[in-house]
Image (cartoon, rainbow, N blue to C red; front, top):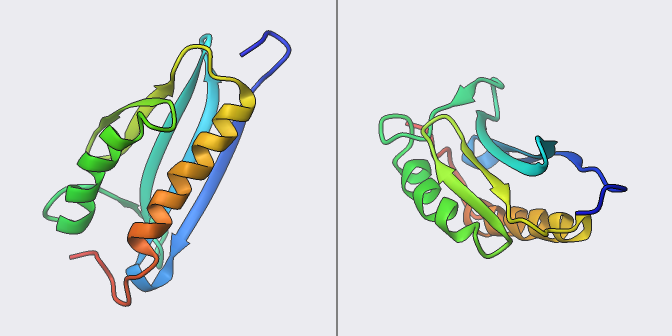
Amino acid sequence: MSANEAVNIELKVAFPNAGIEFQLSAKDESGAIGFRLEAVNAATGAAVQMDVQTSPVLADWGRGYSRWLYRPRIAATFGESAITGTFLDGTSSEQVMDGLEMACDMIRQRFGLYQESILA
């Protein structure tokens, strides 16, 4: 990314039937573009842990998703409270937007079909 560019993007992707909302962000952080994804209860707005006790579906998906994120140029790590990482060096602002589109599309493919809550 050039010195003339800056990234500060926040997205919410909600799936009321599944009872879950995802909050994604991409922001400039100390010379890199940071990535963060958090899960939130769609009904209450409370943070949701991505662990087996809270949602086996979410815990299983989060581990695989954090590895898959390398495809849209994000080196990510799974944590029970969030998936965090950074976009790879040399990623342009346009590539960040493309990467976030891919990330949201993958979320939609997984959670858009649920007809009932995935939360325990």
